[in-house]
Structures are given as structure tokens and as C-alpha cells.
Length: 327
Ligand code: SF4
Image 1 (cartoon, rainbow, N blue to C red):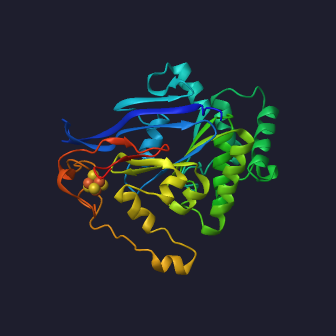
Image 2: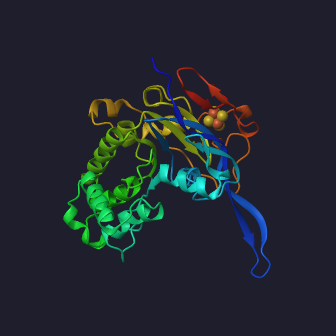
Image 3: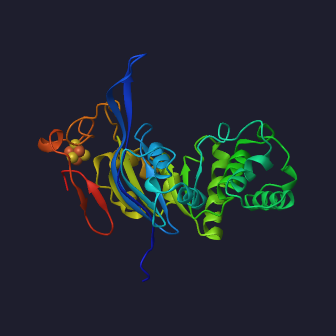
């Protein structure tokens, strides 16, 4: 079997946002620990799912990986290039290789710009055309690639449906021929009826353009469909990571087990047999996370060391990792 090639390396990534007080003289009084020391690799051509409840830090992680936020600590390498310590010219090259598809196709497109201006913006930034005709041809080709008619090139975003707008966002993201895309909940703002179409488009583009995805989502059924491996995040940390079969068939971390217990099962007989785990309480504040295991305030299996010692990241075999004192 051919060894997998690592495209993205994330090592102990932290992103803390300072909390300040005062109007004239601002003092830092704490920090929101949105991402608190996450590490993982993404192999070329694969889709890694990053899942967890709202507010667990997955969007911040995606944005920090692409250097849209400065890093607090840790390193991110994309195709061997250190994203946060790159020179300006190298950062431009990284931005060419790595792009983002945003969650909200309504907010992420400038309403005053035509489709042509939106899709060609990255081409302009990276100087990838030399005249008006080349730009227009490239935009038309990109629109066709994402299943939109090139005749729509001079329309404005408000003239499109949600699914079509997300296709425009995808066209913009692949304009620079990237190898890596962070897809930040790309379907969660869309009608259920068109979610599958956008997912099919992403899968099709992955095959045709040899793309690697970090797919951020909270819909675990969709993640199972599209991802090769899954990382589960809770309060700024990754608590479990493994192939989708390992995670869905043999979940280990109590948080993963609880999340999966809420995924709808189409077969009513199987669904009736399954026990739904309701987690008590709210997700704690990332400005003041609990000591020990961050999940201990809600964990149905909490025991002696959990509120004092942080669990280590353990390899349990078959590429399956978990951070929990039970293992
Ligand atoms: Fe639950 Fe303890 Fe495991 Fe944390 S370490 S998930 S509190 S059993």
C-alpha cells in the first residue's frame, strides 16, 4: 500500500482572544481559549471532518489554520510551508494553495459586486490573468465547473438562490487552483433539499481537482457521508480522532458517544433500540474552562481523576486516538 502524503500539519495550535476592560486604558483581564492546543495531520486527497457543538472552536481552528487569525501558539504547515511564519511573498503563495468556503452564502458575497467581480477577485489578487478577455474566460470556466451558466456572469448575488450563491462561493474558492480547502459548515445555512447537491459538487470537485478538505460541521450524518476521518472537538480541544468507521462504529470518548446517540437513524426498529444520551448543562465558557478534563462537568462517566488531571492523547490502534482517562 502506498504511504499517505501529509499535506497539512497542525501542531499544538492555540488561538486565545484577549478579554480587555477599560475605555481609555485597556487592560487584559483574561482570554477566551477558543482553540487550546490541537494537533492533527490531513493527508493529500482526503477529507477530514471537524465536528462538535456550536462554540467549541472549530470555525476559529479553521480560520487560524488559514492564517485569517494570527496564532497564539503552535504551528501550521501547508504543503511544507509554515503558514504563520511565512514571508509576505510566501504567504501569498500559501493563500493561492489554501482557500476557504464560508458558512453563510448570503453574507460571504459582496452584494454590490457582480458574479464576475466576486469570482475573479482571487485571480486579480494573485495576478492570474493578463487582460479582460482572459479574466472573463476564466470566470465563465469556473461557473461551468460549479454547475452555473456562464450567462449569469453579470448578475448580482441577490438574483441567486442560496444553493447557487454557495456555488459562486465554491467557484471563488477554487479560482486559484488550490490544493486545500477549509469548508466551514458549507451547507448548514442551506435548505435540506439542496444540501446534497452542494455536497455532491464538493465531492465531484475533489475528484476532478485532487482537493484536500477540512470539513467543519455539526451535522454528523453528512460528515459520515463525505469524510474519510473525523476529529471531534470539545471546548477548544480535540477529544477523539479516527477513521469514520472507527468513530461511527466504535466511538470511545463519552462526548463522541453522546453526539452520535443524537444522530437520526432511518430504520425505526434500530432507532427504537438505541439509547439517546442527553448531556446535562451548557458547554462551559472557553474563557474559564474547567480544570482536568474539560468535559468532566457534563460527562456521564466522570470518575476520580477527571476534574484534576487532563487526560493524555492516546493511540488506541488503527489510527484511532482519544483523550479520556477511561482508556
Ligand atoms: Fe469523562 Fe473523565 Fe473521560 Fe473526561 S476523562 S471524558 S470526564 S471519563
